[in-house]
Image (cartoon, rainbow, N blue to C red):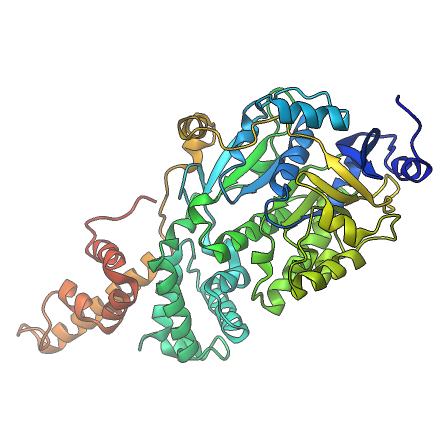
Length: 514
């Protein structure tokens, strides 16, 4: 040990001297010095009490995620990371030594060693490089789907009725064309009477939903929904050497669609919550889930959506899952959610405008009483430094500690494209999820029902006419199906490509694999 710590610094450091396993964050900053003998840590059993990593752009949030994820993996805890900018894949490769890394390690008392961590790479619907992650429309549900489609509260409730109708009628909703087929049927002449039986769904609202689905699919979003649906328990695996597997969801190719990826992340979390058993307090989390760009999740969210998030975050702790929200300021996160985040790593904030200054003051108020002038500290700390407060082993907040954070030991940047592609194809999961499957579901069932209806009408007409010519404008059953009102409506609403799919299904010349 070096020289004795100042009394105030020693008191702060004592709050982080945990007896049990912990993650090493860095060294205390006090009086303009970095005190390597005063280590700032997070208790491992407390990581399922959730957390927040916040700070202005360029202050080091991503490196903090990497640092925490590395240490979790090293202690046998699986980690999920959302890679928004495409620069987290380096966690799978050893870092590069250099003067800056050596200086940081020396400052904070870190024995730095270049290390890569076992990783799997995923991509939403296979857009980008990664094992495809898909969800069925049914499992995604009306609340999350309404968020993606940007529906209002009334339309969200109506979409819920449509889901209910499909459930009651045995119409499986696997992909977008299944949902579109159900909505199209309910707005057709044949389907309108069904609206009366599902309580308050107007044809106008159904039309709005149908147009939203059309616009959504026109943006190329259809690939995210379908089968095989991803089993989120894959995120809970360990590597053969006992380290936790780091699951990296590559989102760089969809970063211009924030509503989509933020809501999809919420689906992943909700699916974990639904499937995992209750475990209560555990020695270490079963999974820690990092939710990057968290403000995108809450922007424009309906009341039902916010309630669902709050409930999921509150209850998933007892399933052994910790959630870290990553965003620019704490005010990006609703108060009901923020109140459940026990661990805080706050990077620097800017105070250039009146709004910035207001956000700074609001952030300071969310911290416990501190020996620091937090307004000064939060605007003066450098990149890779942060203000920290976490939960002690007894669940009480630790003293606020300005901290110089350790350097990640893995590569701080992306791996080469060829390396990433090779890792994806070498995964045992690739063959399980790479190829999309299209089973019989609502789309095929409604198409077949329409064919049967038209065939029955044609048979009745021919019987009535005897051996004479068929009904005017009639002919073969196929011709009558093609000419029917519902078929034309389906073609109009589903577009040329989907229309061809319907035609193949009706004609029986290209039945999809079941």
